[in-house]
Structures are given as structure tokens and as C-alpha cells.
Image (cartoon, rainbow, N blue to C red):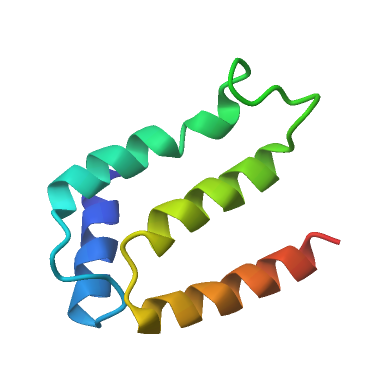
Length: 87
């Protein structure tokens, strides 16, 4: 999984969706840890938070923090479409 994430991030940098100053190896480790959080009942009890909502918000934070303006525009569109499909 780490190699797949690394390839996606590297391609995002190449296509100028993600900042070129990003340390890809550090980001991959961080990403793999953070995506496990929605299943953490202690931090996000399922009676209070939907797993899907937590996942969308965490990934939004992870990607917005490293995205270029071009990448943020794409993310905004993807997020809007995803949230519309939740209904």
C-alpha cells in the first residue's frame, strides 16, 4: 500500500497538483497512520461520528495541506461531488 500511495503522490507532484517541497516518504507514513483514525472508537465513537464523514474530513486536511492551488480546485470539485452522492 505504501508504494501505491508513494506513486500517487509522486505523480501528483509531477503534474503540479501537490507541492514539490513535500517529503514524500514522510507523507506516506503520515497518510497511512491518519487513514486508520476513522476506525478508532476512542477518538471517533461511531455513535457520534459517521466513519465516512471522518474519513472525508481527514483526507481533506491531509490533501489540502500539500496541494497547490491547482490541486485545491480539483479537490474542491471532488469533495463537492462526493458529498452530493452521500444523500
